[in-house]
Amino acid sequence: MNWNPSLTSCAALTACLVGCGGGNATPGGEFVLGSTTTTLNNATTTTQLTPGQAQGVYEGAASNGRYFNTLVLDNDQYYILYGTLSGEVFSVAGVIAGTGQASNGSFASSDLKDFPAGGMPLSGTMSATYAPGASFNSVVTRGGAAVTFSGVVLANTSYTYNTPARLAEVSGTWAATALTGESVSLEIAANGTYAATSLGCNFSGSFVPRASGKNVFNFTASFGPAPCVLANQTVTGHAVTYLLGNGKRQLLVAASDAARSVATLLAGIR
Image (cartoon, rainbow, N blue to C red; front, side):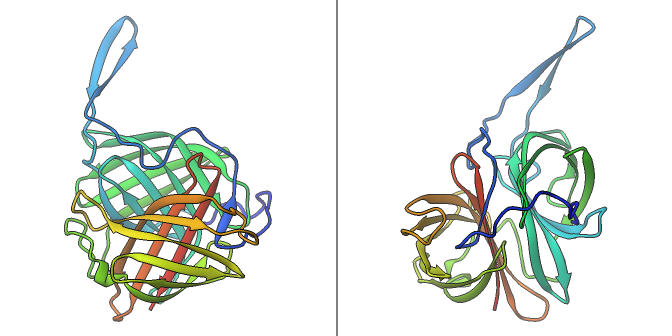
């Protein structure tokens, strides 16, 4: 997912954070079944919304050559993690996040935020089509440029979205990498709580299996004092883990603060 490398750069941040411009949507906001009404040439049409129909984890190669994983939740919140794939190691270069609306095979989002490593965030929009549990094909437009992400369910992994997340699959020690390249040491207890450190910044939080029974964890991180960039602040988000074809396990975490002004991203493999 090779976004324009000439983007305005921002300083690398301690404890796996990228600082970005604010937004109005709150991560984790729940959608309820509803409808939208459109009036065109004095004719009114009503579109029935179907939240959760697009949910799942999808992978593929974007139109710019970048590898990606897309996570769409049961409330139509989504993340697109993009980067490079070497062998089976996913090196993440950025994350796109937002909330959308699903309706009969179509998906739309107007609050998209792209958080690239080393760059300022960009706002944009998404339009997508989906086949429930099979594919999610999106066109992301931001900064005047459009990139297509054609995704299908994860191949060559043990991952099944429609099974409950298991803490036993994430507990233990992880050597992870932050979006800005810092190493992060992560120790996750059997109950999902964890302690972590990166470049002198200590933070802690939890991985909690989602109440929906899907194979996704709700994630929180509370940061300590300086040198943490988000000193004494908390971010929330989601995480997935899956066993790769080579027997190693991948952990992917994406989160932001409530104002969506900064994004946190962790990628670990063990």
